[in-house]
Image (cartoon, rainbow, N blue to C red; front, side):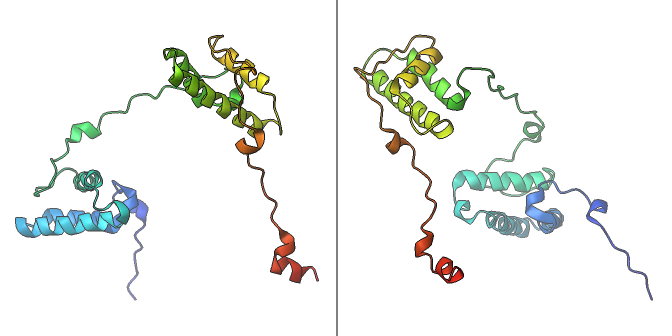
Length: 208
């Protein structure tokens, strides 16, 4: 009896774009071997349709189509002569290393408000005085109150939020309860429902 030899994935060539699977990569390799240009173009479009099936809701979006054709060239090692509706991608562009992302700042006061709130405060400080700035500051204060209630307790005085806003803005934003009123805590944070087990048929049946 002839001995069968098992071929493991580790023994096969690595997949360039793993999410498309090995069969798609094999089809791309066969595509490169087709000599007739018209047939090669026809098969290329068929492969693009298969790639688009991964995200059917984006299949006909122009930007997404461009991405799929780029993926086809990448899987072919850029060694593919076809009539693409988009320019052939430059291999060198894919060799460039992405730039470093700015690392989030650490150690600022009242971390439970989050980085976005601090950035919004900085933007508000930079705006000229006027109605738009006042509305932005009011919105920020309400978001701060919502975040505070989410992570701390069931209620909080507006004076506490105004003081935190003053500190985070380095004293450049000063609100008071006389001229400003934030939204009620009940409208900012929805309480979690425990579920009405008394109306659950399964619960009643189980506990009879």
